[in-house]
Length: 228
Image 1 (cartoon, rainbow, N blue to C red):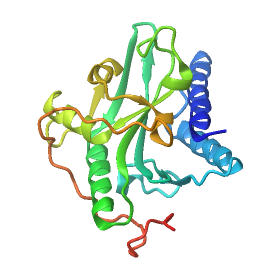
Image 2: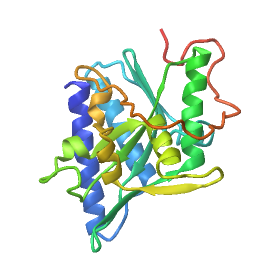
Image 3: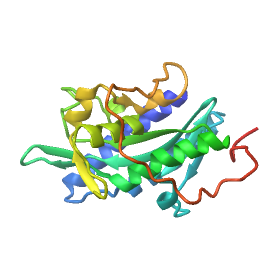
């Protein structure tokens, strides 16, 4: 099984578990989805002999320092990732992601600092968990749309320059429709390998200021923790 097939399978699971728990009257937590996804993908990659490296920041409580839930790398591709689940209100047809602005700024700054330090050239990305919506296509395709990703710098620029986020603002909601219109969302299985998607850029004005995190907790040797 390829990394693309592994990620497609987990995208389907993400869609299904969000839908199933909602039908039970529950909302599965975002961090719970992430923990299962990372554990399942890691085990499947190991079984297939894939050299996929995953470092979760959730269990180590490093999210507040990186603005990310995890870092992963395969081959020449590495990403610092923050995940957000789609909040769906079926009765009124509402669907949105809640973006933590300081967290987004921190993610972008951390990615830039890590790349400049030579430790790891990790691109900043947001992964969105989706379910129970036809916004991505009708009929929906869970293996493609259950988990999608985009360039965090594009999201940052969009929020500051187009939506008018101000300095000191803590959060903002963004609809999938807005991001679909930007044409920057890709299925997450395209993060690696054959058919890999570039983190798309869009022509937006400069973003607001980023905050450089004070500590990264990675080795000062100049090598990433997964480097050869």
